[in-house]
Length: 109
Image (cartoon, rainbow, N blue to C red):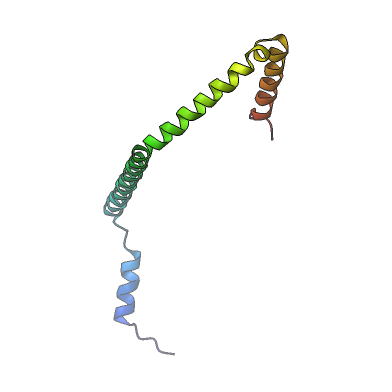
């Protein structure tokens, strides 16, 4: 067994016992985290801008579809107005509304 001390190994052990530079490490870590947050914010803003552009470009056809749906609903409602404003219509809408509320409450698991 060799009892000679290796100077390189002794120096490595001495460095490992030295206190770490906490302030410098924390400052560097905080700056890295801040840069990542900024990058993430810019990507989110870019994604939102892309969604807005897609919506703007498709607004014309979307408005036409919505207008035809409203027109169709108006035509259908004229034929069934008497049923909707009758007591039976009110009762049916109340039962339907209660069913929807009870089905969507958060306590339902």
